[in-house]
Length: 537
Image (cartoon, helix red, strand yellow):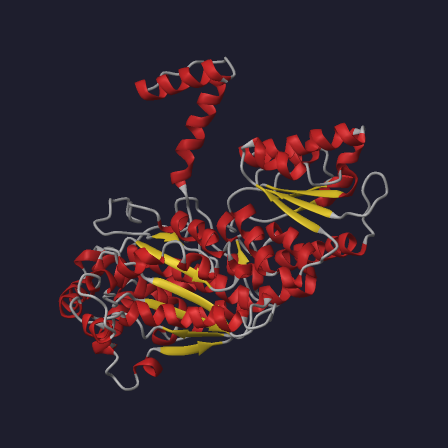
């Protein structure tokens, strides 16, 4: 019988080691002459410096031994080979197949997955070329100048984040919008900005029953028909990313304009599937495939690199070190590039929906903390918002800083100023400012306690030459695999999301009640709230 995580000798050795490290300051660790070189390396286009962490070589060795005790190499191979590691849903987890080359030997239930993937990619390319060239026309014969992606969760966060990140590569003759929230305001504000004769709606819902997505989709359809005065117009202005051909057809979309994806693609890992159709239209097939190649580069690194040189594994283990031993509750992702301003939000879902679990794979409640709270903001915006808490607050908040050597918009000295802040923040977090330094500067005794920076705040620094489609793919895959590794070590299932279901069920019950159908019994608080709502709507 396998030992529970907190019963493993590797875990206990880390607990003992933590007692040695909890009072060590980064200033002390940096007396090591070659520390930065020892704790940094490059993989493909990404350079990572993880020297500003509260670790030494012993820490790293112990963490790697913990990963080995979880059979991490075997688990990685299981995922890549198509084994049904999403056991609660009896599904393979093969987002890596979405970016593998055509000749990759990947099968699920004896079916050639690579062939399926590349068939859909080719269909996406053909459609993309029609939209971008103007060959595809709206109902009245006009070219498409606006694309509206309607989805939620991974069907929204992924395409929107990547579109914003890759705007330098986007078609500037087409405007792109992303609608997700069931709040009518979201779609209403988009509908104000677009011309029905020139708009394509992409409805992204695997089942074509998702409440939020389909509510917005029907509103968009009603709006289109009202303006173009013919139900037949739907076929020219709507396509579907789905697996439910019956519902798609009933909506008014030809099955020829339905782009498939599969059960072995989880929503938050679906960007590289047909869910990325809006992105491909924006940046073109060539850039989209460059992004896929970037994903694949990191996939292969993750699959093949030794543990001690494996970027996702290193980041995962450092995260566990802080979360489970230092007691940190959250993790900040801080991209210093405005194009990446949605990257932290994307991985809020990626990480928190994956590893926000309290039940082990054996069905028992875990005795250790699992997924951290993920948050962040881009560049100096974050500095002028929440960095105060990171620098001088009472919480330990590990940070990932992501930066680029070249800007897509090299205006004056903007980029050098941005990156000066980038490097300064990691230095300030690590080393702080002491009483002695403040006294030498002549700071008054009254102010000194307020101006002391204790330092010893850990961070990782990830650098690339420039934000390109390939680099974005590498970054996303890096975090995807980090999340997977942490889930394996925590002994939880990272690829289901049962925690989002209960709210949906209760919402449907209450909705019926709000429509004066069946009345359900509620707790006194919910009863009072519903009464207030009904009397004031």
